[in-house]
Image (cartoon, rainbow, N blue to C red; front, side):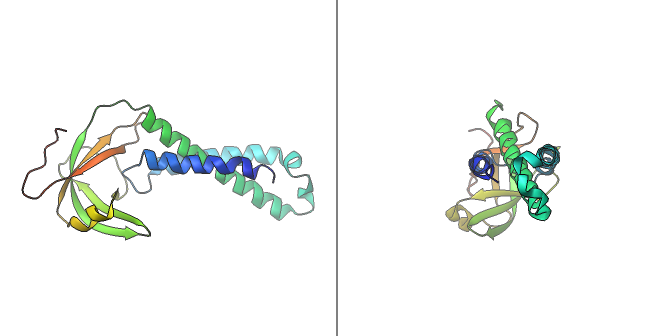
Length: 178
């Protein structure tokens, strides 16, 4: 169990990466695929080394397997943060402002979210509801049906991420030029 503090800072960095390069999808499928695959590999590797990691594991097998599962989950979560960071940091695509319409407003804990949908019928391969995290003032001033431009970058690993956004003023039409 000495290994847990060594992985704590990786979780912190993973959260920072997810904040720096946010996905437009609330729960992207790719996140579960990457983290799940790495969780399985990490669990298998930890299970092979369980006698060295936890020599007391034979006396309390439930605690040992629970600890190994939790450590593998931390490794899986941190790996998604690394992939998310690499996806955004290695993406050198130019600005790509895409028009979206606000469908609904949601407040989740301390996050102010706008549920959005593309205004045009383009080829978006996003499987879940699309949410944009905005400031409280922007959230309060935006109504359903409002337009906004989202700088949607393709991502190095082809996982779209949000580089920025602009709310459109109702009196002036939205233009994709910066």
